[in-house]
Length: 293
Ligand SMILES: [Zn+2]
View (cartoon, rainbow, N blue to C red):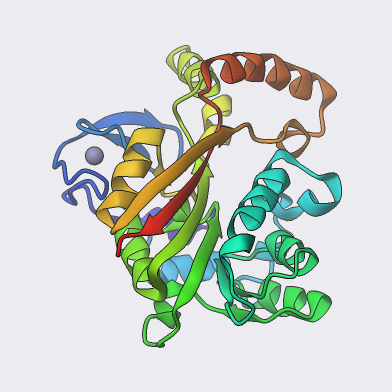
């Protein structure tokens, strides 16, 4: 990360956004900043959070869309994540009228927009990176606005469904972000979210290595551009606090092929995932919610 990130503002005094708890314990020092954990609900976050200016510097840089993160073509490779996105698109399809438009916050390289186009769902993308928004909008012929959910807050838009995959962990205030989504959603409208989970064997292995002084695995599991790390319980608690009821919470493993090109790493992950499948505690959470009437 950039040197600008090193001047993130301290905000340890903030209460936990998921449970309101006021006490945190130090967890890991693996990055430019410490990770801390809420002693009540277990929500993990960096001790300090970047300012809006610092976030702009990360996401508006021309190189953001070129991150290795975006290298893997979910749509082409039919990844686990792609299959979950597709399942969610099919879930909403029967609830939609022909005039309804759904919103995807954080459309990235357009995987979900392509799925919607294929299933004939009218979708608008919202993407923080101007260069990605323009590139995807032009190549897919789907409307993609540049901006964040804050930029839509003044509009009268009301969506039957809002989708957002792997965005919530990037938000400086996830509760405020969900409240804004709530206001953009019609009563009874659906919310579809995904994020990483830290309640699984892979994270415990990372923790084990950390205690031995080996930091590399945890650095992969807790990158510093993710500001919050959830478990299934505190994610549900947070979504409910924002006025949604939770209808479904599925778990899925991060696609081995996306995690690494190295075959040995992929095999190692597959072995760990056998345990994840058995315990139903996997690396990623997929939540379906509905706005309370
Ligand atoms: Zn908490």
